[in-house]
Image 1 (spheres, rainbow, N blue to C red):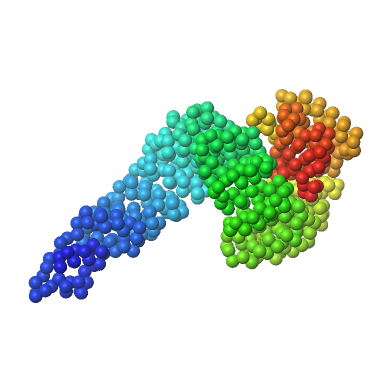
Image 2: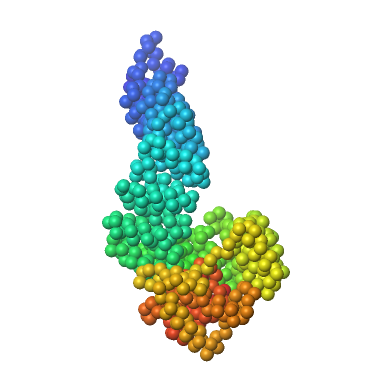
Length: 611
């Protein structure tokens, strides 16, 4: 009977009238042995993943008086934090007598991991008020909370506490500080922290490289990656993903190939994240043959792998291959997601497949799978498809019938279409909507100004530019880049700062002379200023794309394509220029602009002039 009672107590059954009666035989009370701390410790360990049992243990601890032992409550607290039940964890924490710093840290960590960021910072504040000293394990999660809350000044205040407690040179704390500052765009502060580290481990390098990529500083990411190699730090899969993403952003195929070779040599080919980054790099560098070859070799392909390939075919103008691959994906039983359908709709948009695009969109809209139901970006894609194909009124009606509120991306797609088709009636109305939705976006003012300029409504152009000046807005400077010998060379319009400028301009002059001899006529409508025709031609001849192509003709091996990356939309005249150059020189020219790729071969562009 003693063993039965002890067993029942261990199974968390509190004494009941029935169980008590069992222990009273012939008016003789059988005393029950007390549950020891050791017994509870064992029981807590075996029940750590069962919240209801843990709560029963807590109740039993209270009845036995053992709840005053912080070590047992600590075990309970840790279990509830791991289970994500922060409400019960906080209740246990508040019952504790003078909890030690590591428990405060655990609670903060639990709040952050469960996205209860305000609560995490509140606990940190409570620590300060009652005089509990934070340590090197406190600050990383508090800083992470500040970053996620977009609370820069809160983060700065935490940084001050880091310095106050002499932890500003702790590697983990310093790395988290660095990540926080990069997230807020405070690169100078982040770089200072990194440069002043006495020991930079792999985590610090990875954090900075990833942060550069995520904030659009891909060039710096590549530079740091090279610097890391020089410092003797061996990259891991996280580093490789960051470096390949930077190459994809910049279109650095040569550097990307070198990293890809490292992947093969180090046996990282089985890592699905690395493989997806490799696919993305080749696709965004305009080499879909390499991307497809790699895709076919990958044994473990997930939805990201398929979506990357479909999206890659879409931006490279190979819509038929994109849609064929989508069909193959479905036939193999791989469930598409919202990113997959972005690639599918973009494929339709880039070649004007309006009917197919509508069919795919309707399929999404009627699906019960929340993962593929249309999101705001899919609506923007449909507006782009309709507008680019000239169905501007239908695109406008589509926006008005949307079940969700259209954002600036949706209206921006329509404004872009109005600019392409020179719809001077609808365009200004759409622009006014955008000025209300995104008053600080200079690009929408520029599109409206360009529309008026193309229609030679110079007074209206000046009005738009005056509004921009009043708001302190500046047009984004256009630039083009080209890779040669694993180095990126950047050109701006009229640029004469490059060491090879003299040779570049001589090549340009000779090319234009030859081109005019076989029918090239500069599209001066692309110059959106009220100036003389001759001045327009001079301006056109020194666009950044032309300078980059001329540089490529001089420096890129004849057997290799000339790959140019443009930060804005490719201009009409530069598009025509590229066709003529590919015809005259028999060179393949690949240009990636803000929206898509253009592959030029023997005077023909892959876009078939639909762009």
